[in-house]
Length: 274
Image (tube, rainbow, N blue to C red; front, side, top):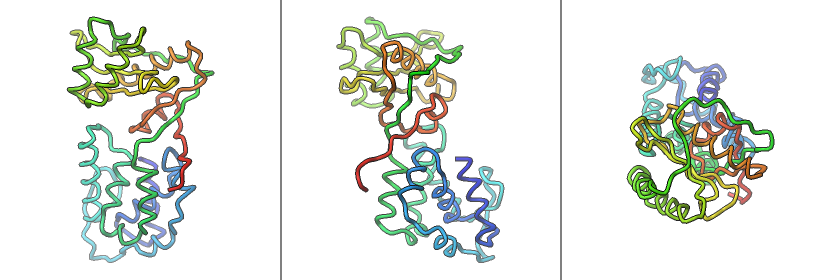
């Protein structure tokens, strides 16, 4: 995200502008070479110079200050950012990510006029949907984790866990957990608070009984950014390595940046044509 913002601000000079617009932010997205956006750089044929030529440099453009940026932004971009934060809250996430930003840009009228339907379809598919990731385990080492208390779920907690997942996440995830609890030795970890309450959970080899598959994982909103997800992830990865897996597939990874930083996971490119 920070790189995208910085690239967008650098585009001001290239477009002889003093106010950051949605087009500048799109230019920042289209030049981001990491994560899912790296695939966009390789596969998307949007003409960046054509976008630069379309930037509104009018001095009458209404501008506002936004703490996310170091330069003034247009009211149109302010509305884009508000939409992006709306997406973040709708998906019950605590950090604004590239997917929220790109999705908000693509419903902006100014951007809509500059892109073809094929361009928009590709950008939506590559940049705004949950993606599969992979992390290699051959040289994996368990990091230093001080908290929270993480362990495998115990039989007496099965019903409590299913209720927790259904209440805080979805019935689909609850059904997945139910299936996982039917295994002889469920590979499901839970994080516990000081009062013994469940803060989050993580699984592997559970979803559709796929071997080497990590997920789903979920942490309650009030306990995110506290290292709970990080701990759950690594307890699972540690056992996966002990089993002998060379790598772990992370399914439907929404917070791509989290997995990139937490375990050096990389996005698996889409093979099908878009």
